[in-house]
Length: 363
Image (cartoon, rainbow, N blue to C red):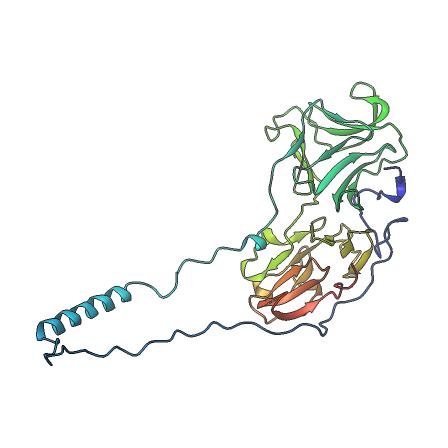
């Protein structure tokens, strides 16, 4: 908690430029992942149905044949009815397939909330209900949102108020809808505000005046004409599935995902970076930092399996995996630290990798 500038970033930049974080994060390797050996194609194919030959007709000991015209008519009738019924049953369901849970958009859960009048004093924290993120009012005066790794281990800064250097500062959710970081001796009637969300007003706002933490994002709902303020740091699933992709499922800057060993972050500076959890070191990046337009990470159906970073308002990709013309392909952030684009029927145990970051041996 006392690392001050080491643990904190200026405003919302978790890592700037070539992924620098003072004393914490080394330069991200400016490498572009390439398919490499070690993957095997072993997709199992379903076996075909096999029909048994029809049974023979038996006769009694006296040689009297059991086949009669009446029985034959009955059997023929039954076969006709069975065939008609089968024709009424479609070979496969015609309803559209639902997107697998892994392919859907932002995660959801229960809000961890600060209501009007509540505050975060130095050292206090607001932790989400699944313990993946926490908002900490640090003793040095900086308000920081962290992604949590292993208990007691490294924490990845996702956002900061940039108010370090003010020991004793505190944060409070005000009744007027504003969320404010004040100096030690400051307050609503005294002044001394160091930072605020600019969501104050006299209107009803969204109807719920509060500050909340949910799914990696710190959100303030106030009373201003534009009552919502957010860190834009939503935690996403570690899957990208092109056949189910919609605009809502693309990543905006600030979004992130995690596996057992790494975090994947689309930073505010437009760089896509993989950090390992054990020490916070950057082990791969897309090398796309900078620019005046923010980017989105998407695997749109039109790209047919290509994972791309596209600037807002433009159609040309700033970065891509080069895996187009593979309908149904998907990308997966794995527990071994690798970020991989697989063929439709591929996977970690099946092979079929089209592209990967090569970070499976760096965690």
